[in-house]
Image (cartoon, rainbow, N blue to C red; front, side, top):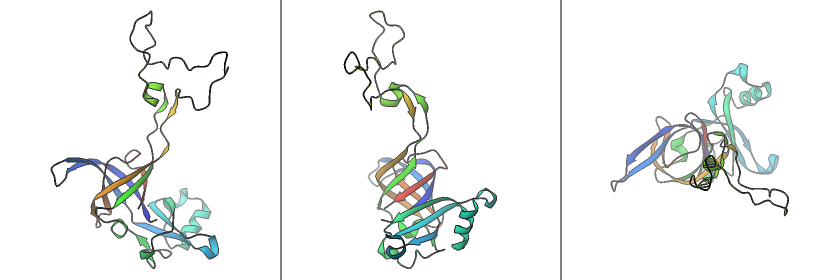
Length: 210
């Protein structure tokens, strides 16, 4: 599996060859620096660690400063490990080398995007789980429109089952969206245009896996 770290720029839309308006997301993917190369002999598995995004040295822990200096690069914001990087990248993923979007992806590829969804705070069951509410304002009801209704607990089982869909904190989760098609690659600007939506707000980090 190969991949790259990127930053979500925003959403737009383009027209496909058959005239359909396709919603898509623009991602600034790379350039990423190889900060560590793992192998079976020393680590027990093959992996490549990539780093992306500049970070001030005064805000970086000293162990990380030494880690980045060993790779010959400045401190970075995001560090991600990709296991079993593709064989055709042999020699390109040496310590300190740079990996860009144009080297990993081509138009027509399908990628998986991993990001952190937008946090919504504490939400009710209508927004959190798509409940319809208890219905109209009849039979004496006047303030139950968005309430969850009965949760089924009575003298048996005298408790609430785990996993019951109820109100609670919503969003802020790690979300993976699979099989997004790469519509355009702009290697000079390190930009990718992928179909569909990618989790997270603008300027949030996104992991793209191939």
